Image (cartoon, rainbow, N blue to C red; front, side, top):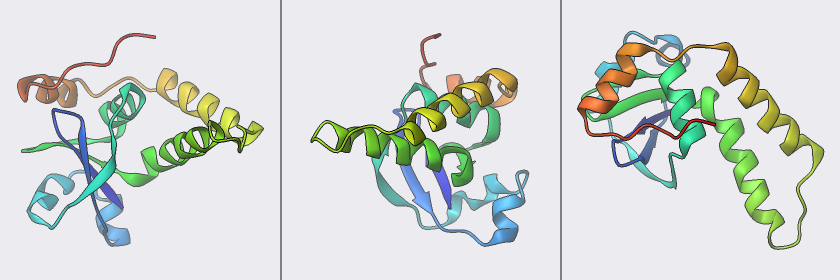
Length: 126
């Protein structure tokens, strides 16, 4: 799965083959495919991950779903917890892994500059 994140933090997704999913340099050419609107919006953490694992595309940033899906699923579980399901240690562990991943890898300067040129806002520092 690929995600396309637009400058207003809107997200779209598309399926991809295993070869497309590993071809980082070729992803910008995938913008011509059919994208499905996602119910999720890119929060600061998703953007930080996209700045590290994504590539610039005419409509925003394309990022492999593997870079963001675990975080998004953890968010769904947290949302469910407000209805009484409870947040478990796995969700806390995922959040910690994501924080460590972001801290360990510098954002791609060219992707960040592209994002700003499109009018995208940067996430606040934490």
